[in-house]
Length: 310
Length: 115
Image (cartoon, rainbow over all chains, first blue to last red; front, top):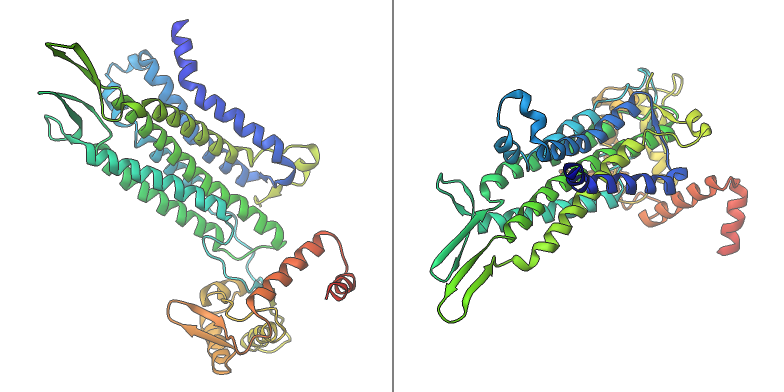
């Protein structure tokens, strides 16, 4: 019973994110077009994947006995994959969303005179959101990396500070974790860019307005999944830093007894913890909003969904 | 703004040239507005990239467009009938009017009344 409570607590940002996403969909659904056919299946799969990976990771971390049948200890592996896994899931999701749609019939003799670039079908709001999340992620990675020190094996994953003559240490999101994660981040952004270009590049099919509407949704979905995966990654960083902030030590003194000393950023612990919760909640909401672009809202909408399958 | 090729209107290069020139002189394409890349327009129309490159070169010689390395091909500021702002506002007005199911003469009445 106790374990179920822990699981529910751990999954609460995912559940809250799902509620938020469905709520926003219910409010704005009438103004939105819907993907169906193959495009709908791809959107649903691509949007669900990062959330599913995060969900399974949370469940397996809390209940490691679920993996006992394998006969191996997964705890270290799971800990190591904590930061890179959301980005890996995001990359697979982007690959799914970037699968090219059916090409326009050959022999078409009309063309628009407007340039189509990767950003043509994308709203500025999503670009700003992605840049903001990337900025915060890089800033935190650099700050934690600069604060890290090598451990006994030489890995930059330790945070040490002095209490009088003693030294207290804890693990931190140092270069050991952040360098591979930042490389994955660069690959993720590049993949999103390639995905956007693949959506924009082919000639527009007739009716052009309908094809442009499909591409606007597909471009939005690509950038949403990239942002969602980065938010999951950011949630892992913030959660890890919240854990590091809780490290402390006790210093015995002759005059004042035992003095408890916390880390230099102990005061930020609660803020980091709640920021991690919010980031995971938003990541879930953003990814599930991609799934919901494949859900028709009324019988009439079901009949007039945007079909891209032949 | 669409370019359409027909089987009876001359060679593809002539048709593309005439239509782009028409879009510039009537103000549908504004000053300094960027044209699609040679590759994009060629793929969209199903013609060889060389055909589009030839058209752009001819338009450049006639000073309808300017081509700069890294900046692509843009409508020449001297050739365009309207500025980019006017063209953008006109397109937005057209979109809104179409959404409200207005006829062209009704829109022109509104413009005359607000002039």
